[in-house]
Amino acid sequence: MHYIARKDEIPRIGETWIPVGRKIHLVQLCLFDADKIGHHIPKELSIVKIMPNKTLGAIFLSSYGPGSTLEYDEFLLAPATVKYKSRKGYWVTHMYVNNEKAMWGGRILGWPKEMADFDWPDAVPGSARVSKGEDRICTVSYSKPLGRFRFWTKFHAPSVMDDKIMSHRFRFKADFGICRATYDIPKTSPIFDICRSRIPLLTLGGLKMEGFQAEDAEVLGFIPNKATYTVQQLVENLVKKNSPTG
Image 1 (cartoon, rainbow, N blue to C red):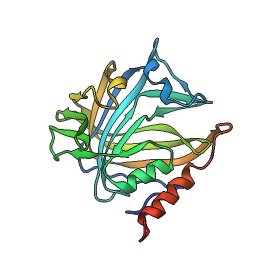
Image 2: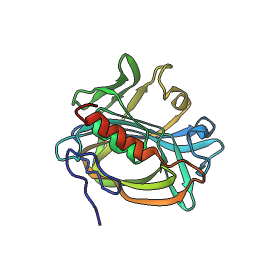
Image 3: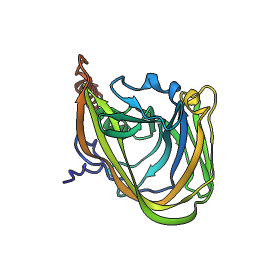
Image 4: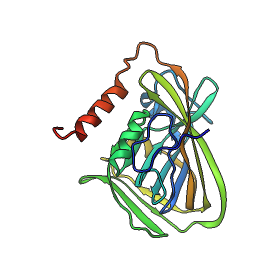
């Protein structure tokens, strides 16, 4: 059973986000160096390697428009497949959005969402520039998707929420086709070290995207001796920020 988050409100834990694409939904699957990612991942999770020192990850670029729980653009780096017990999923190291409610909703669920600026005209082919102030994170240029047909993609993504290791499912349906895409990442970008030795495998561009995000939230386990104040601090900060005297 889905508990759907209310439109234009910060989704609560256990609520499913509804995304409706307004621009291209771009996914590039890559091989990443496992030894450059290990310090980003809790020791309770293990990196799944498909060849020596290589793990499968992905870079996502998407835009959620009218009909979505929240309207915003998002750039996401998930450079590793990890495993906890029997559950595998993509581990997210960087998430950039341009909607404060989306940022808080992600942080409450344990994801490292940050605010960023998106210069992204609605065009196919096209390009998107993601930055924080004057500091550019990445510029993505992409072609028109070729050979499009409509199908579902799905994956799990774990996170750490307080002392809990969580798992969430993501599903997207779109008119997917193969794209050419380039990712211009400056040396000063926080994602440069992780991405500079990646090996691109496949890039898909999807149009008319719809789906479900953060559904079927599940507690997989616990991290021993970890303080459990994170969510409460986030909520208190949010209340303070939105109070008349905050």
